[in-house]
Image (cartoon, rainbow, N blue to C red):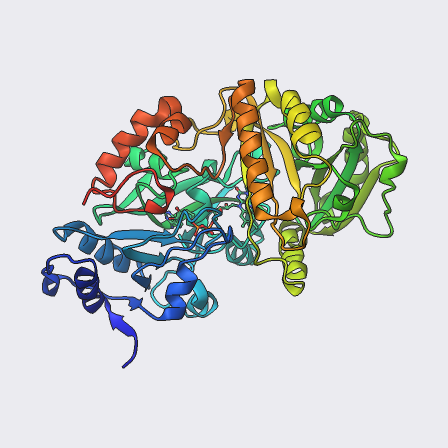
Length: 526
Ligand code: FAD
């Protein structure tokens, strides 16, 4: 007998499995595919972090928002209920989309992703709308950003704000923030969304925006999946450039590096000719990392003789900037870049430049992924730690962590770049430090069984703990990005002043605590 069942049967099974009383499912109008296939359960029990594994009871492959409504309603209305968790592309680190005793909804199709995306069935295709200078696209919440890009480029358009990696789902990044080097200018992805359709924890499908059901809209953006499942997002677009000039320059002095980064992000809102389009940076603690998976940019044509550069404490900092251009601006790009670079104080001999198509720049991490996959180095544990550090304490962080705790081996890229808080809407759920400028510090490390102690999962996890302890003891008021806490006390500390609002929204939109329990913020109330 096939292991694919219609939803009523599975709900019956769930009810018997978790020992619940039988639910009047005959009255429910349920569609969509539900699976209890071992391979589907296995996929849904894993994530990119590779450190936690939780098997759901079943997996749902929705073909429309109505399928999700039916499932959540069934969970909400049954006397004892069961839990439901949306899973985008499973790129969380700490099991945030996982669930025991419940159903995982594969928003991007899970292992059947490509097929599902090709079939699309009832899932509406992206819809582009253009009104004068402003345009937007409506997309399914499980759509991957790479597919959104492919689609919008057909109209010469593209979203304004990105993540570094595009094989993430729209709903997954909007549940966090979605950041990359464009955030200083446009804000995170959650600042570039006009409207959402959301299935709440009561199974209601609600359209929301800043002006309509605004409490739900703001709650969901950066809301860690706690208030509803995003089934449609309306994303702001801009004219897509054709090409990108991608530049890297090196610093051996941290304060000069951050002064320049902060100067560059202060140019937000200026005409495009007077600012860069993307500002990021990374830390080079050991020479091996000059060509790590995020920075294979330094080609043999552009050799970096790190040892010839005078480093303090053996640490170098790389500023990474880009400028977009197309045919109409190709003749001015050299002058514009030169004028901007003149204002910076990097090591003069350390300018590395490459020109490439816009799509190739946006999709750069995928190329690195393919290389790592071919060496068996992608599906390994990833004890990543992402922190927002206030500008006033970033120098202390440098001293204590980059030049201290990390030693001279890091096991992965370390990104560092500042953002402007005024580009973040304070009504959204995500929390950031209480300063006008704060830095993302992303320690993107991979644990390997190479026999070297510094590469083991245990060693890297321990180092993460040391970093958090150092920040606490030094009074650095950081916030975790893509946060991971296990107790409500810690979550209260994380949300700070916003906790009461977070709690109120939870009571309003998911009173039975059915959704996204893998975040460990609320215990199910049944
Ligand atoms: P999942 O891991 O599947 O889900 C994450 C959370 O969101 C879960 O709690 C889940 O229940 C919830 N959720 C998922 N879909 C929905 C939905 N439709 N509605 C409501 N809730 C939902 N982040 C950045 O900001 N910038 C980056 O540059 C960046 N680069 C990355 C590169 C890599 C290689 C990886 C692995 C991650 C990166 N991330 C980055 C982090 C990424 O944004 C988050 O891990 C995000 O949650 C992943 O999206 P996902 O679709 O895989 O979500």
